[in-house]
Structure formats: C-alpha cells, structure tokens
Image (cartoon, rainbow, N blue to C red):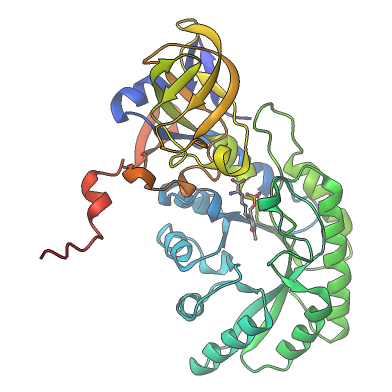
Length: 411
Ligand code: LLP
C-alpha cells in the first residue's frame, strides 16, 4: 500500500498536498511517505512465522539519515556496501550488531572501520578479501565475524545490469571455492565463520528463484556443518521486485513462506536484505513542466536527478499532481540535460500544461541516491511526510555546495 493518492483531483502524500510542498521547497524534489515506509518494513518484519529473522534494509536504495534513523528505531538492521554507508547507519543510531557489510572491493580503511565498530558480519566476496580481513584482524588482535557470500549460479533479476547471481557475475565466491574458504576460516585464530550469504539479483518477481537460492544455501550449510562449523545466520539476499506501473507484485509474506519452508530444518536466523520493496513506492519525484514544444514536455528534472529511465530503460508512471487542468496528449517527457538519453518517458498519455507539477511514481528506491551533479546541477531536496506534517530531510544543494571541494589554483 502506498499513501500517494488523489482527493478532489489534487495529489496528496498522506494528508499533505503535494503542491504545498512544491510551493515551499521548489522542484525538482523527492517526497517520501513515512507511513508507506513503515508498512513496507512491517510487512517484512511481521512475515516471519516459524523462524527468527532479521531484516537488513539495503541502504544503497535510499540512504537519507532521517529515513535510516526511522527504520533503525523500528528495529531494522542494515545491509551496507561502503564506509560511507557505515558512517550513515551508525549516525542514524543503528545497532552495529545488525549491520552486514557486503561488497567486492572493501578497502583496508573500510575493513578497519567495520572491525572497530564491531559489526555483525563482513560478507566476504573473495579469497583475497578473506586474507585481507584476517591480516587486519591479526594486527588489531581481534576475532572478526564473517560470512561467505557465495555465488549461487542463478540467473534472475530484471535488467542485465542488476543481475548478480550468475557464475559470470563479479559477485560472490564460486561454490567450488566456498568450502575451501570455510575450512580456512575454521582454522583461523582471527576469523569466525558465522553465516552464509547470497544475492541473486534485483527486481525479481519469480519466487521460485528465491526458493532455489534458499535451497542452495541450505545444502551448502549442511556441508559446512560437516566441517564442525556451526553457523548463526543464513542470508538469502534482497531483490524482491516491485511494480513500477501497476500494483501487482509478490508480498514479503509470499517470499518468507517459501524461504521458511525451504529452511525449516535449519536453526540459523534468516537474514533478508530488501531495498526497493521497502523504499520504492514510498517515494515520488516531483518536477515542473517548464515548456511544451511540439509533443515534448520539457521538465525541470533531468537524468542527473533520476537516472533509472536513461540507464536501464526503466518505466516509471508519471502523473499530473492536479487533474483536469491541462491538455490531454501523447508526450515525450524530457529533461534539461544535454544528452538525447535524458528522456523520462516516450509516447506517454497524460494531461499537461506549462507550469504544472508532475510526479514520477515509485522513485523512492535508487532515485536520489543515484543522482549526480552532471551539467553542474544541484541535487534536489528530500522531504519526509508524516500524516499532515512534512519536514525537509535534505536541503537542495546550493551553487556554493557545487564548488566547495574544488581547488582554485589561481590562489
Ligand atoms: N543486497 C545486495 C547484496 C544487493 O546487491 C542489492 C542490490 C540488495 C541487497 C537490494 O536489492 P533490492 O531489494 O533493492 O532489489 N540501481 C538499480 C538496482 C541495483 C541493485 C543492486 N543491488 C535500479 O535502480 O534498479
């Protein structure tokens, strides 16, 4: 359920008129509904029926501090992929023992940071990384908890760019190597193997793919147990798909039913790392129609603000925040960036007039986090709505912000 809806032809987020937010903070801007985020998180947290579990929200999908703080207060753990994300989650008040650190290129600095903060686990993605973590742990005289992220060799996920679980993908450790690494870790004085983890991709609708991943994890855990290693968690990844143009997609309950069933004989805690299925439909991006030229709607948001359509040919539904005011037409909606790929939608039927505020739906995940300063554009603000109140949770960048890290060589 998402709390963006029309009342008397005017779009609201919860009980706040979108136009009020646009008047106050301008466009383009990202707007999030707290109630939607909350219900999406609860749908996961309450879906554990027979087993204990931990939801580690995937910070990469939406990383605003206020949102992480809200999810942390609701008991969420976090899946992070960089030192920057670790810094954010800790600042948001996250319990370090609910943070898992994934990613194939963890640097010395990031490993040390995670060790010092005593996080739940590093999801190791290569033998070299394992050796590196062990060395740093030895230097610091620590015993570090780790999990092996294995490559499940499953071809799932939406666009080619967001598949992660095939043998040829750069992620995870091949199954043939996994048991060797487990053996090594079991003999290490500085590494403690506490989990297995895998991730098969993003934007997945086929629950059978998750079933296969859980089954794979179970079999591998049995092999690891034969080495006299007891595990604490099995992490079956994130990636439950959401619909960008209608409202039909599998629920966390459907997903967990299958996973719990596959793992029913296992005692470990189940970890999931959902991102977009919590944050996606909790956010919209609003933008103003600056000009209409032939069938082009020229808006004030560009691919720098929301890159998904240009990068993955992603389809987002676009709506006018005020119904009944503009002219119906079939439009190509484009932004200000000097590239022909800066197209939000093609042949798109909607009513529109210059000056109207439009909303791009399902922009909460991989929206603001992937924005950039391309064309020296300022990143948009983020606003969080809760019932009849709204708060700025990130300011619009200023021209000063754009220049603050540049070094003026003229002195
Ligand atoms: N865990 C790991 C290890 C991941 O790599 C990802 C996403 C997730 C969890 C969360 O996946 P989700 O539940 O959000 O599907 N920028 C792309 C998506 C990239 C996803 C990368 N990994 C997009 O806009 O579609």
